[in-house]
Length: 142
Image 1 (cartoon, rainbow, N blue to C red):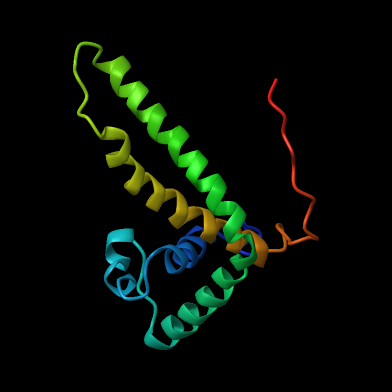
Image 2 (spheres, rainbow, N blue to C red):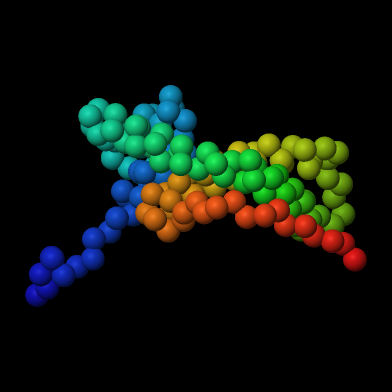
């Protein structure tokens, strides 16, 4: 028989709840808990979690300008990859004009909506820190 103190604690629901606070807009989150399979917090806990989320996400503010450049590039790569996969799956089908632009908005929202909360949580855990600004990288094409 094992002692319950020896068993690891599953913190997955706590991490999911924290990410949900950071990802889902404040005016929507209260109706999302059941969809996420999570227990809604009490009003007092919700108030604290809401404030903590804003504080956590605010930490990434210095990273936003450069991160937005990377998000734009990543979204373009992902969207083009999705189109290439569609073309490979249905080689004879004609894809609609403007599909790249159609995919860009939802892909951007998913990437942006997850990158900043993940960075904020890593910063809060001390796994990601802001250092002095590095000199700009200059890349030459050959």
